[in-house]
Length: 369
Image 1: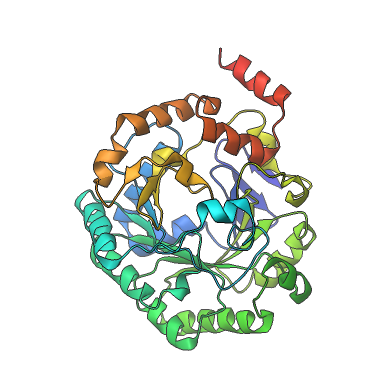
Image 2: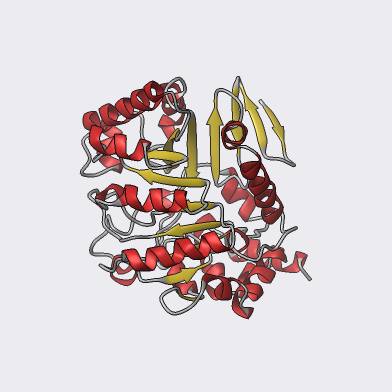
């Protein structure tokens, strides 16, 4: 195994692995997925990803976010134990899950403003199952018709009928990831509560067949695995299961759904991402994106509890004004300097995510003096 720290690019046997921050690792048998998309989408995609890299290195502050995540609703048909929706009696569910929806007119406003400022990337999904929106494909197609070139989503694939698959393939979707978190049926039942393993496998395999038969290389297809104590033993098996089927395999580190409860029992036994965080942390997300909740609240990151960091509401403010506000600039400055503790919720997020203790925090604070 070869590890080049500067670019977080690893060659593991014959698989390419790419990550910007070790939180999500992308495995591919062929060239990096970004190279594949560059060859398909051309110079506009190449230029956008150059900006993305510069933003992640805190070298570029754009006039508008490069990526919008729009949470159309907060509805899901599964009850996964790692998710606020899967814990209906929890304080996190009561606090952060609502029945609000972003209606079509507000969605249009978001997309048209993104088009105005040349925003290239969109995810029309948040804490939800996107296929529960019967008109999801219309939302994707509208964004594709208005300048968004990198449109992505995750789905649990339980509702991925052949009819929905065809609509998605025709919608302008660039990337799709199927959230599985397991390689076997027994484990799937524990981590994807309410799903039918056989149905999901058939739906995904049929989607891959239909994409390949269409002659199109889009969307690129990935499978997702959130690493937790309950499933980490299946990581290698998951790679073997999907390495010759999906275009890429994504491994993501478990993130606690809120900051008050102790989720340490759910963490994997080892995590490069968590180890790195305990040495110091600069959050890139306020430089990259906006997460727009189903309530219209505009937030600087995708944390489950990001509404605590609301910067404004898109129903009565422009995204451009919010992005360039003093509040956003202050938050970006904090994270560029690595002083996450200066924001109460950022501190809670970092400490709870990596089990950071007081000694770790004091060491980081002293290094910034």
